[in-house]
Length: 189
Length: 271
Image (cartoon, rainbow over all chains, first blue to last red; front, side, top):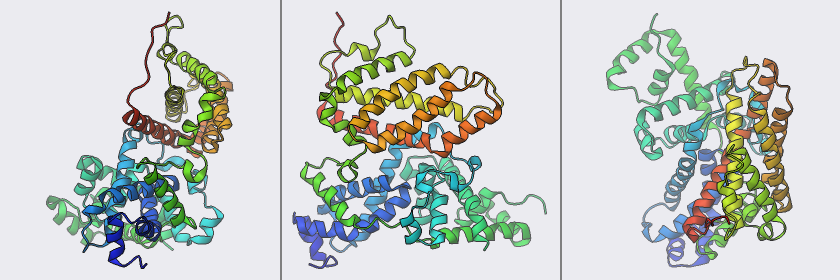
């Protein structure tokens, strides 16, 4: 069974568990990377992947056969990530302990500490960028990712995150400034 | 040249989102100002660095793990299987561990509830809401509420300290009694989590306890340096963030449980 075969999606839609499994196993790594970029940590990314697949399973009947399945899953994953971030938003708004005066990146939490696997698996640039991304609050990260990576306008980002445009702008400004402060020394070389 | 572009304007410009009314001014300034051109180029280099960074890869074998979790969730009627399914720990396993309620968990729970009531500062003669719920309780729910309260109170204290002015020598004075109570509650909850084998929760509670002990045992008047050290420890260990995540997940879990089962915490009058 070839996972690129459109009939795999059709069979999954008809309730074929093996076909759905093939879709999950084929696309989960991509979805994980996307979810990790949105949420900023492995545990949330895993939960988002699961939630995205459960949602996809429920909505498969609505999937247009001519559409690209990965693109469809991409959209679902972004929405699941946003749901998770929005659910936590009110708590994060109460206080943001992560500001630029917090000290060197090497002193940040476990997520920012490169594990041997990470060092082996990723380039130095990737590590630097991920460390810098870990400085952002969940909301800043989501706003920045939607604007910078997903290419949404600030207004669209605000609508997605349930924020006013001015608040969205400020989240993006803060995110970019943190990223710039962390990465500028490396970007010069 | 005066009136250089602000960082915000440079960011909006890089995204092509400068307001129409400002566009001509910003473009004209950028065309003439070498300093702002350099700032713009530096920003562009950072953006390029971000764009070219490869994404975080899923761990080896993740596709199989993902399927195992999805399959389990589908088989359990669509219910979300949390991290415990793959990591053997996490919020759900802590609160869904049946032995919790059976093997001495209830006793610990009620003691924890007692502490929660005490910490809330209520009149000891007045039954606290937690104390009023003595019959028909579902230990899992009470436990969730109690642990949630504990995490909230701990977080509140840490937020206050993290934001305190470092020149306030008596900043810890009002917190130490609270810290002592929180340490006691924390130990009970941590012991229970330890028994249920939830390494993730235990890990966070251990970190929290160290900080709480530091606060509880600090001299009444601390130096500015001591306070700065404490603040740095709170932020360095991402303790606040980790507490928030756990508390948030617990609330989500409580909402899910309520939605699934309906309310089953009944208040009974004390005789």
